[in-house]
Image: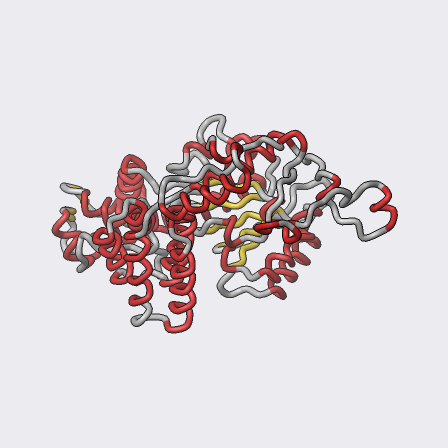
Length: 425
């Protein structure tokens, strides 16, 4: 049986690779490392069909090292250990480490990821992971810290057009047919920046024609796919576009638009937990202290969807969506943590003031730990002024309340407690 077109057209070298110029173009980081033959472990993050697996294979071919592949869907801890053992046995002194490619690494459990740490740290294998999900959410921190992260983008129209030309002119099967592309809008739209999907659609459209001459039009492609041109693609670029429109509609306080985009995702078969997770993030980032109940409702919707699934899960998701979109908005907590992180990075590990330190031993007490600390509950209103920031930052302003009823109430209390320090914000 002949290989699918997408596999026949898979690039074997960097010069054949199309797209991702920010990574593999002249002077770009991955190309430079390949040319220097020094490859660290790294993770490729991007939507499906943009060349993650292909790039890993090109790296292995260029370095001429053993290449092992595991799928997070079908492999367990034992499979990981078996591959690591093979890599140890096949590695020669002073040669580059074998490459272990793990597709959908975000689906690896914590124990599976833990089993990789030693081999990656010792250099037994060079790990290349591929994921369509944000690695900072799905990959454990120790493993993430040992890997470079490279972000791949959906292929642009020029890249897709080049792929089409190459397939028609160079493929051993298609080059024997007389193929004319009169219209390509449907091909581009359905592929959604996904090279594999583009090749599959092209192959299907060509095979659907019984004549030697094949004329590709938008109507012909649509008829072959038997899909609505507005169909939702939960694995392609539209997945990211629609979730972006959904969150921005909530942030923009438009319940009608938000519930529309929610319906688009539900009708398209989106993972309900993915939607619920984004609602929880939006409740914290966009509504925040203006309506703290939003986070409680979003989290409750997440729990409900996890318990009941589809189709009833659409109801708590709709409730949370409308509530978040119709709530007052504030990003003061979001801004505060970002400002605090910038301050920490700029000032380093400043010492904790002595009066804020615990003194569980006599030695610590003799050194002044906890000396002078005032226990708030011993004072009227459960508050007493004292310094809680390091000396160098005692006048720092990190949280700035915004103008909404909930935060103005909080700010009034802060002004009552701290006076001028908060009155000037």
